[in-house]
Image (cartoon, rainbow, N blue to C red):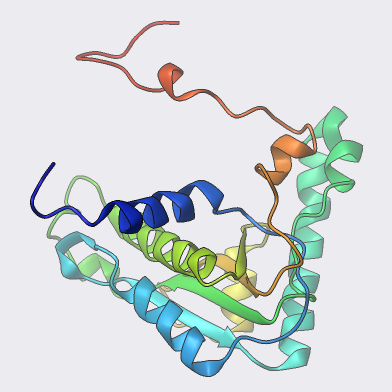
Length: 215
């Protein structure tokens, strides 16, 4: 055991937060105290980022009419996605895919503008800015679970339309609509698995040694 390791109780709490994190769609209304929201956003802000560029930007949605407009954009994309799914269209439409109108807090996570200026770590992998934002979102997600709050990541939207709605500058890109707030209960397993949409793969099928393993 490393001398830098947390205590057994602290380690268990970290692994519990990871294991019980869920992509939530059902919320119980309520509110998130301002100091708690600040704590969660600070956790997101402590994420690693390529070249320390910190590409994340978070927009808190507090206007009811703006929340309604965002929900409408998601509804439009939901219909387009259903059409693209073909024979699984009806099955998809039965799924609850967001909690925008029910959650206590609504955030939009976006990539900043001017990202092309940041070369460190991105010359051959420019998508590392997106990876950095994803790390920030995951920090927020795990901190929320530890605080007893649910969070859901919604990606069903047209990025250009949402960027225009929120007045984002050229080059900025919304990546996630984040629903955050109290929930009645956490799903015992990923919701899409519970609904029979898909079955998660076991870890041993996703870990290779020395080279890519053929199926």
